[in-house]
Image 1 (cartoon, helix red, strand yellow):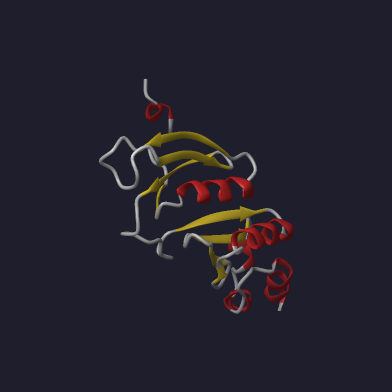
Image 2: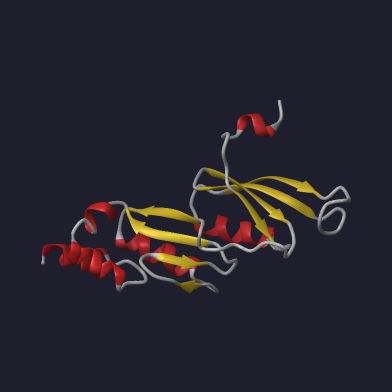
Length: 156
């Protein structure tokens, strides 16, 4: 049985411009319970140099991903993002600081990392926090989400 039979039916497959290994190392350094699992070296006719890494299988917090060194043809855009559920402001602060290294803040808990991948760093109870107009208005003015400020706005 091949490795694919043991993995979930649907997994994210990310296209990088020859820096997949750097990206995988970066992401694995951020998320606990993360690791590289497999690698496929280029047998020849694929993008990149023969013998170089073509794909890397990895897990982020136990979720399987594949990274491809596909070349410059495609770029990430904010139409697809990864949602990180955080249990505390400390978790939000940690993921925000790490993922914006070399990247940038966007709005409403969204950021773009140094590889161009979009992430949403949000409290686990985001739906409750922004369930009224004042709290939603407060969130719309934020980049990194502030749980205390959202709770306060929801009380007014």
